[in-house]
Length: 351
Ligand code: 13P
Ligand code: SF4
Image 1 (cartoon, rainbow, N blue to C red):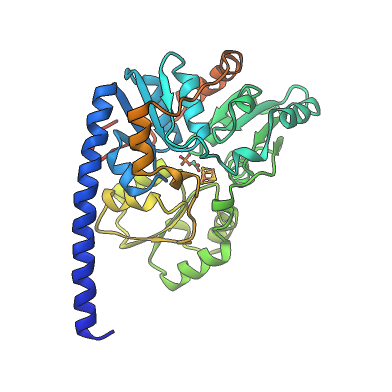
Image 2: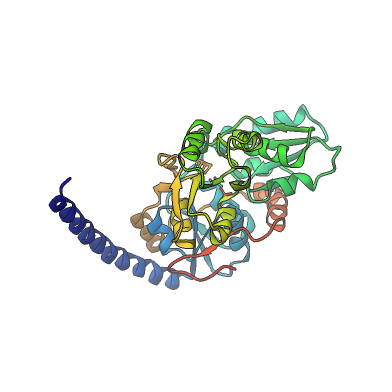
């Protein structure tokens, strides 16, 4: 590309950015107006598209958003995320209207176990405690003793009596991480995985880390590379002091204090928007730029506007199922430090 072409490209980019900015300002203002009119709070997960994050009241990880849903006094909770998250909000706030802009936004990890499958697993392990990751359906949560998120899974498992068997589900990589951190040997792990995180490979992580030896590594425990990363850090193949396994909320906390000039990020790429805002001095580099959750990216400005204008799509959980799931979910939000709900550009601070 010669200098003239580059200058033309920059001009086109500037015009496109300006046009986008003007459009975004228009619909963000309309979203904020409708949210105020409906007495709605908009909660967006860290993996949502940047424009959705910027229009929300709060952006955070599963734990922070569950806590916000439970504490919110708004009449309507709009969950810009995936279905199990909106269901969790409904379980915690049964008297509130919970809306999701895209009811088809599922989760490949949550789909790896059904309530009948869990009942059969439990039958083979009488007396075992069932710890269900929040990425599960309401029916599965209703069969669990405790729920957890990636931010507090190890603490939840460690809180159980040492001699009690544990059934941990459904994520095998998070399970392996928890087993390693707690040193627990009586833990059985369901062999589920998230297709996005499983696709972030140890080989790619190692290749990127050796190309930039000073970089820090932030790795979500759902990643296919997380188990290998801990082992490689132990063997000296990855920088032990700079390899960190973190929930998305944990990444945000670590972003604010890191002194690294580059951080390699192993999780869904939506996270980069929050990280770049939290610390613009750092070069935030995805380990796999293709790690995009199509379910998370289903929410669009148009579907969020429609959700607020028309009051769709309402999320319901049968009272009997919600009643059985509530204790496990309430235990989840009671454990662990604040886990990084960031003030969204349009919203207010959560912590
Ligand atoms: P967090 O628990 O970090 O929010 O990540 C969960 C996740 O993968 C959402 O799908
Ligand atoms: Fe589910 Fe994976 Fe998407 Fe998270 S990133 S919502 S675990 S499919």
